[in-house]
Every structure is written in C-alpha cells, then in structure tokens.
Amino acid sequence: MYVGRFVVVGPDVGAYRVSSRSFPNRKITQRDEALTVGPTEDAPETDNPYVAYNCLRVVETPTGETAAFGNGSHVDPIAEKLELGYPARDALAESLLALDYEKDDYNTPRIAAAIGGDGEALIGTVRKDALLVETVDEPTLVATYETNAPEPIAFDADSAAEAASEGYDHEFEHAVCAAGVARTEDGFETAIENGT
Image 1 (cartoon, rainbow, N blue to C red):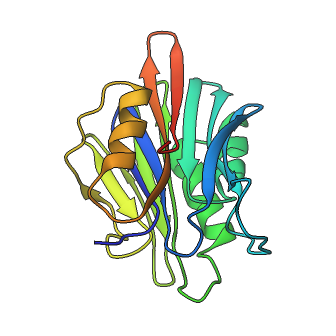
Image 2 (cartoon, rainbow, N blue to C red):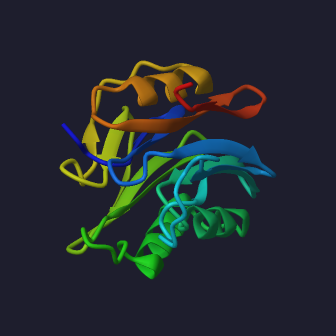
C-alpha cells in the first residue's frame, strides 16, 4: 500500500520516511542543526516547493531538548516555537494551522511530531478537512495518504539508527529515505537511512 510520507512517534523514539512515486531522487543529509531532505545529484530539475526541506530538528527549550520532525517547511516554525517556550501541543497546532495542507494536486496533508526531553510525545496533521494533534504513549503513525489520522502501529526501535532503518524498511511502498531520532540519557541522537 502507498501511504506517501509518514511519521512514527512514541514515546522515546521517532522516524520520518519519504515515500514518493513522483520525486524518488532524494536523500537526507545532516546540515547545520537539521536533517534535510533534498534532491540527489542525479535528480531532474524541479521548481516544486515541497521537494526540499528540513525534516528533523533538535532544539533547546526551557524544559530541555525537544525533537521536531515532519514532512515539510513547517518543521522550522515548530522548532522555533519550541525554542521560544511554546508547549509542544501549541507549537504543532499553530504551525500546522498557519501553513495549512500543501496546495498541490492532491491537497497533501502536513504531518509532524515532537518528542520532548520531559517525556512528552505528540503527533499531528493538518488536512483539507481537519487539524489533529494528539499526545501519544505508544508508537503512533500518521501518513499523508490513506492513514492520514494518527493510529497505533507496531514499531520496535530503541535507537535512532533502528528507528531510521525500521521506518525505511516498513512495508509501505516506494521508500526513498528515512530519518530516526531517539531520546538518550545525554539528549537526542539522530540517524539517516538513504537506502544505499
């Protein structure tokens, strides 16, 4: 089944996967303080604004480090609001609502998640017909298509590398690349799986 891009979170580990039929020539790279989705060297030129973006950022907040991740440019304002001290629920809801769903041919939902250093984990989506933000206490998935409302999922990763690998290898079709994040005693660790 093709569900497009998806996030999994809960409560100490998370993953974001790019799945794409239209733009498969992408990879995730470490850039400054973010993991960034962008075209590979052999990708055709495109002016599509939804192809390149920061997909995962770990930021310092008043309550400790927090990881924010998702499928587009909304990850940056979520991270910035978290740094300013917004509660994760508000940072997700306000940023998703402000940027709204993607205005492409499919009205693609924006999806995002946050894991706080304080043990809180949330997942959210904004679709053409709804804005949903939920606190999670078990692994939960939301995708851009088919599974576009948060639902529990079997996800057995303990580290960022395992999360990236499990996200990439998930049975959903057209895997392109994945990022993983996990809370550790020393803060958050991140990992990349580009399938190569």
